[in-house]
Length: 342
Image (cartoon, rainbow, N blue to C red; front, top):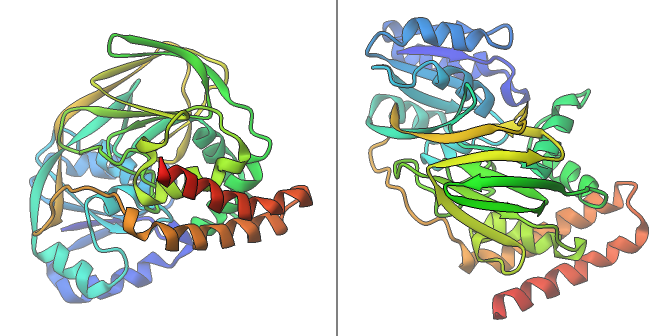
């Protein structure tokens, strides 16, 4: 086993966190601690020729760097999730926090082959996208304190949602041309962005297809409905504002704002960009009982909307948003109830 550790992913001391595994595995493991961006890709590239387990310790950005060098190799990727979103790890049901569970996963797992996405000469494993999610990725990358976590993301999302201007895009999804304004355009290999925000609830890592989720501009009073649908795993069931496709190839023909992201990291997606799938091209270690399954959580929706509304209200009160938008709290709940009755 070879550990590649991002020591500060998620704002934590990940070297200290990994001491438990080093002591348990003893001579059966080696490790490398990263010190700069891009280093993980070179380290994993040198290891990719061997049939061994390479353990990415970090968030989706670290996982992307490491896994990109392991595509179509004999090496196998394992993940110790230490980021703020941990989208791929969550999709693969990899334990997130408990050290004993993580150790058991490292010692007792099965290996599957998952698809990977291509965007120009870059590889992605969870999602890539343009629009609001790209804007957030670029802004979040510029935050001076660089604090990461769901609450920080949510606060930034709510602040930007009030004034965000949609992008105009002309895209080809296989043989279909779509030309319209969008709040978000997501290309998904996995079912979520991270933090269980299920942008593509029906996506599968092994079906040889990308899911495309298009979200059209929507009234700010529907923000709670949209976010709760993401958390509940039914964004594809929202009428009027959301359309989904499954495709093998997508092309960006025109885009008014190229701010995008790849696995949560900022990236500019220019016109003429092509996005495609590379079938079953990465070996991944998953828990023995792993099975891809539905992520829909409609039975938990009332609890989620109450928690979400409290978070949204708190974020609005602590931001520069006009005070009249505090009334969103009541509107959000009513919108959700109307939606579920349709």
